[in-house]
Picture 1 (tube, rainbow, N blue to C red):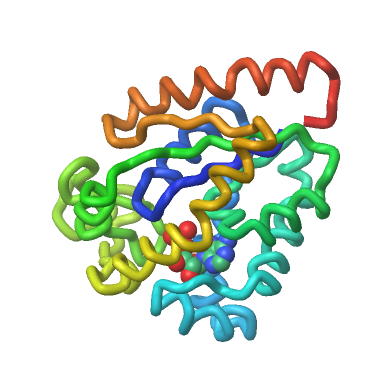
Picture 2: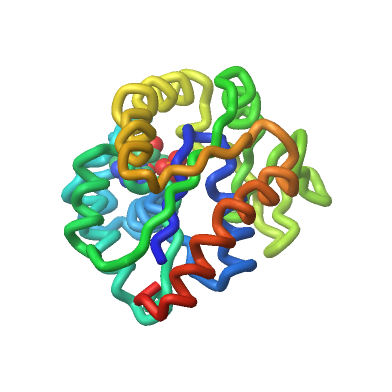
Length: 223
Ligand code: AMP
């Protein structure tokens, strides 16, 4: 099974992806996390990606595809995987189909109005060490500025600064939103309301996934 989470930055793909991972047992693969790790480790690939990420633009397909190709064939992805933040362009969507063509696919698009997205990203904080994500309004850490999980400092991601957020939303509208029509045509798209609380949204996600995941497992297909 390939579960694709589609939605603008700040729509809750990471949060819903973690809940899906826990409920269905598939790993969540976030290309943003893979890229940030490469940047932090100072790999050649990370160095090539950093400037574009800080500007809020898209990293070239060749770089992202290298990371995805390495990750989706690891043993824990055998039964399925969740893609968070990938594909972000039609070319990337075609690339993943070519790379791993035999998997059943479902796409969950999370809808959130733009003003809510801006508010969420401005309040978003991430742990410098473990990457755990908080929100100053809806998902506060126990102690201000400190990660509940590992006790390290919480920071605002450089690309969550207001001017970069505006650029990321523009890039989403231009390059990623066309994927809604693309997957709608393929009849693999389900849309859920992501503007409400996390648990209610997850209820909709579950309703969309249950039939498809069970169907794929029941048919004995390579899920
Ligand atoms: P995210 O954590 O998903 O918001 O990603 C953070 C940044 O990483 C994005 O603003 C892009 O610069 C880059 N990025 C993540 N995924 C992709 C992708 N599939 N294609 C191109 N760039 C990406």
